[in-house]
Amino acid sequence: MRYWLMKSEPDVFGIEDLAKAPGKTTAWWGVRNYQARNFMRDDMQTGDEAFFYHSSCAEPGIAGIVRVSRRAYPDETQFDPKSEYFDAKSTREAPRWVNVDVTLVRKTPLLSIQTLRGHPQLASMRVLQRGNRLSITPVDPDEWIFILKLM
Image (cartoon, rainbow, N blue to C red; front, side):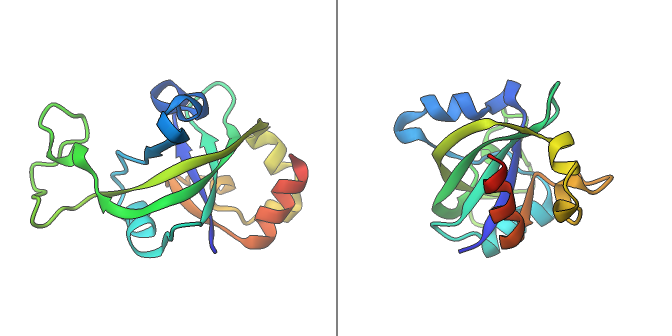
């Protein structure tokens, strides 16, 4: 099993939205970065777990834990001309973008980015690196265990 951190803007789709979703499951759609896409397409497996991270908000941080419940498949938003995620170069025969399904494991008290930065054991986490813009990043197993102890 691998561990991940998956960012979402809570005013677009937050942990509360996931908690209200049927089966507490949703597609993780709208990823338009090739490296983040490759993580989903090539590396994420059913059963992997991820921190659900609220980004681009007043208080960014980890808001919960999710489990990958379906491996990568084409992201339907790429085919919808009305979607902000539409990609005219993507076709059903050769889709460029994928999503995975995630299921809520549990909501957690918010673990802020400032709190995460306060622990030298987490200094190498990608989410804490200056200039990191990736919406999906791997989490080292030792970092995962350490963060769980902070919750």
